[in-house]
Image: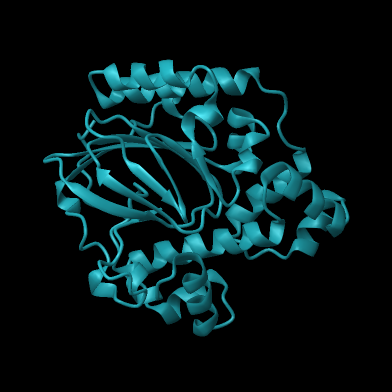
Length: 298
């Protein structure tokens, strides 16, 4: 998820988050829910500034691998990954850490892949991305330039979504089964239970030992089952906070031991307090964080 950062980088300043960018100036587009554009484990969204202007946004941990394609005509976005930086389109792994973008958010396409889908689309590179960010071209391969040019030349968002879906389907069709059935089951159960199912129980469900499940899960998806559960639980909590729930209610509904436990996790994943995270305008493109996105923005 993306949020606009506080101008003075003070983690607890809820009022300051989002002040760096006028999000009312951003048009959001999402694909229509039709079978050709519905790919398991994949979500897409397009965005453009109605009046291009310089700004800065930061990345918040999300249970997916994110492809952020810069389709603007101006200077490419500058991505800062800790001390490193790169310009243009990027691929962002799970748990990216200190990541921000600076520049003009002219037009962009965001593609989110669950770790299962990413294993099919990106192969072994999906696990290598964990905790980091890379150039989209390095991850996608020789066809990256052609896909980027085709998307940029498309006249509408619907056309761009169709082109991206077609490219994703080709890569998925060409992939070998990317993960063990037991690993896929564990990921899906982790999502469906909000990260609240014990690893021992998940291992029993698969018929594997906890040690074997943890090793195979980490090798194929890039994180341990325990870390995945923590990330999924945080994501649910973040959405509850954005929907207006109190920190106390969010902690209870998300499976945290208590409110201080929630506070520690939010601080660990974002550097902010729960109140600051709740006030942040995200660029995750969903019904909670963009409730006023125009339905006909495509």
